[in-house]
Amino acid sequence: MTVNKHQDHKIPVGISACLLGDEVRFNSGHKLHSYIEQTLGEYFEYRKFCPEVDIGLGVPRKPIRLVRHNDEVICVDSENYALDYTQKLRDSADAQMHWVSGLCAYIFKRDSPSCGMERVKIYQTRGEATTTAKDGAGIFAERVMQKFPALPVEEEGRLGDAILRENFIQRVYVMYRWKQMLAQGLSVATLTDFHARHKLILMSHCQKTYREQGPVLASARKDNVAEIAEQYLLALMTALKKRASRGDHVNVLEHIQGYLRDDLQADDKAELRESFERYLQGYLPLIVPITLLNHYFRRYPNEYISRSWYMHPYPSEMSLQNFI
Ligand code: SF4
Image (cartoon, rainbow, N blue to C red; front, side, top):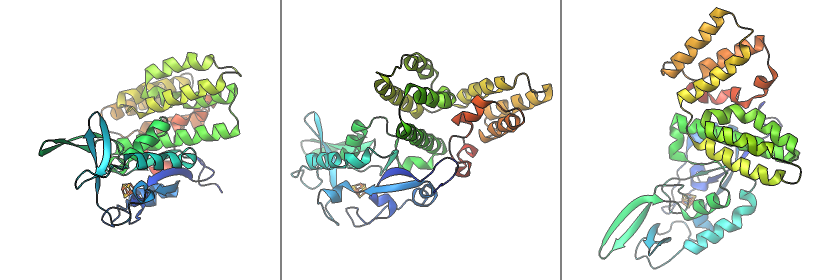
């Protein structure tokens, strides 16, 4: 079944179970997130999981928290810090790796000592007083991120921000296409083609990684392609986490316009330049210059640009470029 022209089937994405409405929180509640469940659910096939239920804590249960203990961060009961759940949560994470390895992304519940991706409270006991720092990661989430450093991950709270939302979804689709490429068979040719189609996306996020990865890929041969592919994927996904500024996008848009150099009339070029300028100044969203460019490329087709995912990185119905 084809979901849309971008995907043959829904994309497998892991998620903290409470975000889909499962009543698995310590207080028997849930944290249903309607955008994730309904809007993204049109494109994503969720694999939900609650690590605290998995280790047998039950519902309802006493809350747990992260605590700094000597040089280590551990996860304990919040009442008297006597019960240490750290290893159980790590073991639970390790036992899930067989299905996590098949995912294209993971959406975590923020602030959770098990599922939080970042800035989770760590309590520090000093004598009678307890102070907190918000620089921890949930034990389960941390394990997943350590095991799969290239996997796109995000928290539900950050998906309310248009730029972070677009960034995450773009990474999900890049990972989806990567897994499709692997399923078809990794070779120097398929890896080179993957890079060619993602070059402009990479260029918009990090020129340095873009420059570095060209020679890396050029060194790929039959006997080292798996190793090169692994290095490339990590470099690519790390670069894509960086926010692409309006200036970065304009550099790429101008680069793309260069492919129309011999085709456009002076007034067409002026119209494009004006749309780039107004986008740069924040008066127009990215979708406007992209739509204009697509219009000209329909008239003057170019194979490299039509195959580039920069021009259509995810389904247009998601309307993500209307808000960045
Ligand atoms: S452990 Fe994770 S999935 Fe379970 S209730 Fe807490 S945040 Fe939600």
